[in-house]
Image (cartoon, rainbow, N blue to C red; front, side, top):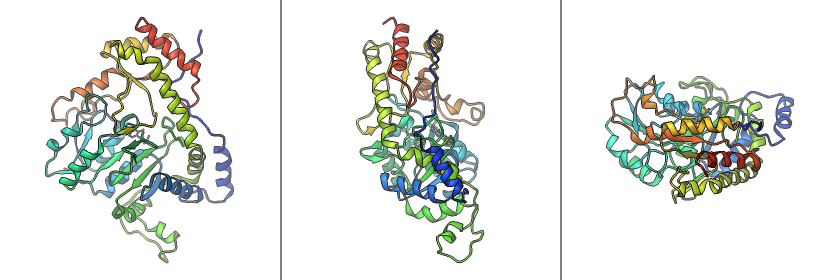
Length: 378
Ligand SMILES: *Cc1c(COP(=O)(O)O)cnc(C)c1O
């Protein structure tokens, strides 16, 4: 029997435990210590974000964004339906109504050409998601945002080190939210970050993240005592998490090289199946430089995908589907008043993610490729 090929395995650079020990021995393991500052500086210097704030998850970064934008009951937020629940839950928590937009035909990303027709006087935010680290078409999206004076929050959970026309994802909208969950490219178990590109949000973001206090300014010596100045919550991770994350960041280039090789192997091994019309591979628009976050195939329909998952399972390979359109979720289906979203539903039914992690060997990848080819009789 072949050994099991997992869908995901966390990958360590080797320095994580050393840095965690350093953080513990420093005597300060609450948030915003040396390792948090190192992580902030790394991201700000490498990607040019105006300001970064580590959070305990991307979900928290999105909740922080929703607070910052003063989302209130009845406000509308435009987001894709084919996304993770946190993208919109952060805004639903503040009472927002989600106006779901369909995906593009060619990628699971929001179809930017449909956004303007969904805008009403209640619209408060545009919320694009860069699925699989492949950029949403941001120029036309930002043009619509500008025309209606709407802030843009990029859900860049999957998009670290990915680009739109050479601009880092998460640096284009007013705010961006990243994830370091163990299934992402760069990990800290759970973890996230808010990137702040519109400087007018920077001061308040710090306060909301620190329980509504101006403690951050106090620690910098800018004020002589700190107090309760706004609403807020506790979104900052401990130094233990930041230490782990920093060990990963030091190896970002190496991790990305590994992942691009894995992505290229799958693409090369499955390309002729696409040419033969058996399945579709990820489409990368000319404006997008993706980050090899995942590799998916698109089957003809739900039955075929179910059969392919079973076939791979019989070869001891774990491949998994992804989101169920949120407008059809048990929570939102009764609230949804919009039209059918055909592309979103098609990705719900046909998208299959292949095993993808930094440590996967080329032999394991060849087994996945051979199993898929065998399913299609090649
Ligand atoms: C992973 C993910 C999230 C949530 O990230 P957490 O860090 O687990 O909160 C949100 N949106 C998208 C698109 C994701 O892929």
